[in-house]
Image (cartoon, rainbow, N blue to C red; front, side, top):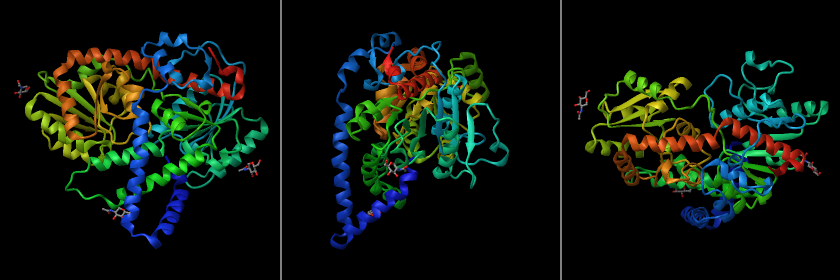
Length: 497
Ligand SMILES: *[C@@H]1O[C@H](CO)[C@@H](O)[C@H](O)[C@H]1NC(C)=O
Ligand SMILES: *[C@@H]1O[C@H](CO)[C@@H](O)[C@H](O)[C@H]1NC(C)=O
Ligand SMILES: *[C@@H]1O[C@H](CO)[C@@H](O)[C@H](O)[C@H]1NC(C)=O
């Protein structure tokens, strides 16, 4: 996410090191950094754990969407997520917008990450609504590099090395297209367009899929999850040391972007309250998932259970999905679950995804089914087969799409207590459980889940589905972005409804 600014960051870090080294031993630097981490973290935790924006909280205490009809006003002053509002699907914009999108990657063949999936889902939907969407992205292989004239989204792959993003090459293509007919708005996926280019563009919106302040929190959680006999890895230590300068750097350059889209409520709060971006330039639009792809299907779930060999007497089925790596919290789940099953031998765990922790899960015996990476249709069956979706991530950046997919499939969540998850997804106790990212807290939460049982969990799942369907559909996301882009072009569109 922050890679394009990495070179500047390391420059800045080098400067820091140089200026400090001559007169201070290196462990002083360590303690200085630690001091800053603590200094910066404490206010953040206070910020995020005290109720803020009271007017909005009281307007939207209920998760039912009809309440949002009561709100009206200038959208740029809305601090809650735009997903809570109703946008008419019939009311077509007066004229189609011409939209330029800068994204490092555009998913074509490989399994895309969260940011690329977002870009694809959003801009395909906007093109379907009649907007002239031009995507400026890095080169793909030969075959896919040609796009059809007059078909949107129109993909401009810049020249150069496969998969390597060069913003200046993309800008050249943009300039050429802009000369033919000027773009109404520019959308940058994260730092695809660097701040020194963005500075001069008043019609630009950037979507942040994770910011350094969230990485800081992530670093702290990851280190706390390290066992006392486990040494800190030099690489991790280095990134932990570098994260405070990274936050400072972001606070300094983020203001160069005219409009900011935060993809979670807590990220919006951080941008306003910590990054000091004027409130009117921060807009919260939560990512959506395809509502047709992820839905409730009891029969599909039942078939899947039989197919993979879950016995009928299973008392509970937990599911976890994603890359099976350390920073996604798998050491925590592995440990907590292995303790849980000594007491509850009929609780099963389905693991979807691949990575180093796959084989360790297999070692836990036949109550764990490690199924590897899944196709979208298999994933849909997976969500329907489980009683609850577990996400033990130690990385609170952005919002994991799997959480929304599970909710959309009618499943409650068991997830780490992060501001992003708490503020946007688990906004009601009914939707599931949260735990602090440590083994004891997770085990305690798992015990509660077991106590609940499948029937109660299914009831919670219904509530999840209702909430997710009102908030996190791809359609809702596209309509919210469309409205934002219209509002950037012409302020009269900022007045809601
Ligand atoms: C972590 O990095 C700091 C600063 O570079 C260094 O002083 C410290 O010794 C490192 N700690 C470990 C355990 O490697
Ligand atoms: C931005 O605008 C300023 C002043 O208008 C100009 O000096 C600068 O070169 C511009 N930067 C870019 C990257 O276009
Ligand atoms: C559940 O079923 C499996 C096989 O179907 C059996 O081995 C196991 O003993 C059963 N467990 C209980 C507690 O009945």
